[in-house]
Every structure is written in structure tokens, then in C-alpha cells.
Image 1: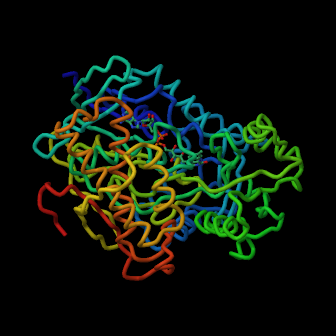
Image 2: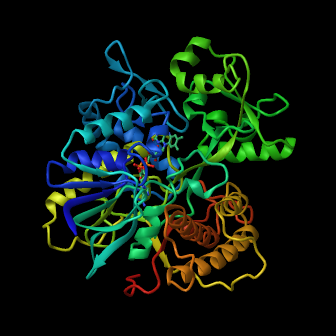
Image 3: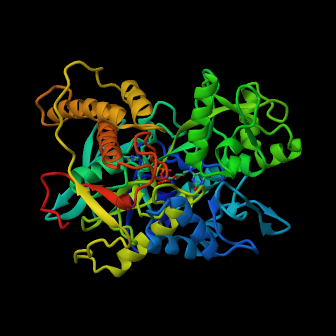
Length: 533
Ligand SMILES: Cc1cc2nc3c(=O)[nH]c(=O)nc-3n(C[C@H](O)[C@H](O)[C@H](O)COP(=O)(O)OP(=O)(O)OC[C@H]3O[C@@H](n4cnc5c(N)ncnc54)[C@H](O)[C@@H]3O)c2cc1C
């Protein structure tokens, strides 16, 4: 078995940034299941939030982040996020990311729920592409070894310590095991769970599922963010129309051409994402349409073409000159706030196992992520992972994770009576179920129905894994589908338990937040060691 100091699974911003820091401390292997740049990172448009404007400060950024999180975030983590942002930005500049400047100063834009302009960007609205291209070029010319088209399928745990990973070479179908001192999951979120999504095909919750199976704690899975404004054109894959478009003055209109956001919230188009997404859904229901419109025709055309060149070009290629016509939009699945529970150093409850980026739940987003805080979280906590590996004695167990703040509830996935009459398991059926029953607007009835269907699918998948069926996962699609079903179960059961509405989690039967629910829901595999509650 080949051995490395660090094995990193994933090659988005979190994986590549961690790799570039880790190469100074030991040998590095990156496993990634597509080509190096298959990830969500390259689709990021808006940018990275960093408090650097004259009227801004880490304190103000801290306060905006806590306000968006809706009473659930880890305040210590948020303090780290906002205080250490500038240092990580300096790293990104050193690695060569060409952030946009004006007269030699980095330019800042404003996004919803940020009280001042604080979002830095590159190539106008092509921030993620510049990050991915630049970091992957750096990694390719570094001593780090990269194995593309290599799917991590199992975390190898020995005596309570993560020892390595099993992986499937998707091209040769050979299975190989690799051992390491430190295993870092940087596998991104779970956006492919839903019928309408902004996420890349590779974002199938693998890190969450692998960590759960290995005995790691999984937290806050009910908190999933839906982006309000995603292009809705027949035959065109969902394409994000950045928050920054509303930040620059874009107005939302219903199919009748009427501006509606002031009816729902005093902040109108700049209200938080969950409020805007829900308002759009209500407006679509009222008008019997599957879309609303984003209007930028009143803005100077030059502002649109220079500030949003990527969006402008994409829409133009699909027949829409957005300087002249309205943009049809609707909400779509976007970002997982929950994930593999880590402490402020990226450590999970399994010694030697770390998580960074969207797959990790650091607690900084709480119930709702502030726009442009996720790229930042990936680098701030990614850096801390590497710092931690340098301060931990290599062979000694890592201390138990401590997440400051609110109370926690620990749960196992419940057994549910299998259903006999239900749709067969397939990716489209799973995505439709999640969109309809576990989406933007939830209720006990829909969640219960989804929970039963998912449990039945899971039972059959579990049997397959035990080898009692010829359908045991053996290739990339079947592994991914298994991982998605497990993540769907974690999300649905958590959403059912949380009898309140908070942040991105909204239930019609419990429409208000409840002080009793100012706590995190954490799942862990049943047959693991007794829990300390
Ligand atoms: C359209 C869009 C726009 C966005 N805009 C912004 C923005 O402006 N600002 C912001 O802060 N955030 C934004 N976000 C969110 C942000 O882009 C992501 O949260 C962030 O890029 C996640 O980075 P990551 O490295 O954790 O994961 P990703 O970039 O998704 O990378 C995950 C990697 O893991 C690999 N992988 C997964 N499973 C396995 C496995 N089993 N084996 C091997 N490899 C595996 C994948 O192939 C991929 O390389 C946006 C997201 C989207 C989708």
C-alpha cells in the first residue's frame, strides 16, 4: 500500500489550497473523481467576502455572518473566519489569483445581507474559474501527486484512527488502497440531491456519506441553501445569476411585470437568500408560473457587460440580451451548510480524519450562509487543518472536537417500516422526491413520506452492500447514488426532527423559530461506540 503524509480527497478550492500548504510539511496525494477542475469551485461567480473596505472591519463582517446564521452559528468559529480572512487572501494573491482592481486597489462589491461592499472578485463574475485554474496550475507544478478519475469509496479506520482510503480508478475499474497520516475530505456538498441545482455533477455528498459510514459525526444536515435566482430556460441547464446582480440594483418582477419583493421584506431584493427564495416560490404559486424575472434593463449596459461578462455572454448565447430583456429565473439547490462535524481546526471525532470546504460543518454558517462566505471558509479552515497537523504529535490521538456555543442533540437514523408501493430508486426519482418534499418549503406530511421512501431505498441499498444482491455498488454512478440516498436520509430525518423554521429550513407546520431548537442535530452510525451526550 502506498503511503503519504497527507491524502486529500477532492480538488476544489479546499483540496487544492490545503495541498499547496501541506506540501511544505510532507508528501501529498490528491484523489479526485473527475478531472482536476471538475468541482463547484469553478462555477463561483460573486467572489470572496473579506473585510477590507474603509468603512468595514472584521467585527462588522462577524456581525453580518452571525445575523445571517439565525441564532445557530459557532461564534468562535465566525470570529476565526472573519479575523483570519485577510491572511488567507494574502496567500491567494501570492498563489497568483488575479483579483479585479481599480487604480491599483482591489475592487469590492456588495451582496445581500452584507452591510457594506466587501466581496472581492476576479474576471468580473468568473471568480471561481480563476481560483480553480490558478490553484490547479500551482498544484500541477508542485511535488503533490494528483490522481484524477479516482473515486474514494471507503475510509480505512484502524483502532479508531483513520489510516487511509480505498479508491476506485474510474477508468481502469481497479480498486486500490492508500495509507496516510492525515486524511482530509474536501469533497464538496450534496447539491445533486435536487432536481434543480446549480451544482456540478460531481457534487454527490460522498464525503458526508464516507465519513458517516466510518463513524464520524454529521451535523446540521437540515440546513441547505437554495439560491433564489437561477436561469430558468427550457432545455438549458440551471445557470446561476449571481447575488451580486441584485447587489448592483437588479429588480425581481413577477410574470405580470410587477416588482414584488417589497411586499415580502423591507430589504426587498437584498433580503437574505431564504427569504428571497421563498418569496419567489409564493409569487410563482400566486401567478401560476414556474418562473419570475430579474430586471437589469434600467442599469447602464456597460456596467452589466463589464461587471457580469460571464452572465451577459451566457445569456446572449441563449438568445437573451439582458441589457434589453428580462431574465427568467427561479430558485435552485445551491449550498450545504451542514456536513461532517469538525472543530475549529478541521478535526472530526475520528483521529487523523479532517474535513475542509463545503463538506465540513465548521458551524460558521449556522442555519444560513452569508453569500461569499464559503470560499472564505474553505481557505480559513483549510489553513487551520494544515496548522493542526503540524502541532499534533504525529502518532498521538487528536483531542475530541469542541464546538463552542449551543446545545446538541445526538441521533441515530431511525428504522422505518419499508413501503411496498413506491417508485424504484433512480437518480431522477431521488432528485424529484427531494425537490418536492424536502425542498424550499417543507411540512411534516411531505417529510414523513420522503423519509419512508428513502428508508426503503436505503434498506435495499444496504442489502446490496452486504452482497445479498448482485447490484452491490461497483461503479461510479452506483457509489454516488448510494451516497446521495444516505445524505438524503440524513437531511430528511433532521428536517423532520426540527419542528421550527430557522434560516434556510422552513416548515409550514412550524413557521416560527423556537428557542427550544437553538441546538444542533447530529447523526452518527448506530453500531459505533456509545455516545457521550
Ligand atoms: C454556481 C455556484 C456559484 C457559487 N458562487 C459562490 C461565490 O461567489 N462565493 C462563495 O463563497 N461561494 C460560492 N459558491 C459556493 C462555493 O463555490 C463552494 O462552496 C466551494 O467552491 C466548495 O469548494 P470545495 O473545495 O469544498 O468543493 P468543490 O469545489 O465542489 O470540490 C469538490 C471536489 O471533490 C471531488 N470529490 C467529491 N467526491 C469525491 C470522491 N468520492 N472521490 C474523489 N473525489 C471526490 C470532486 O470531484 C471535486 O474535485 C458557489 C457555488 C456554486 C455551485
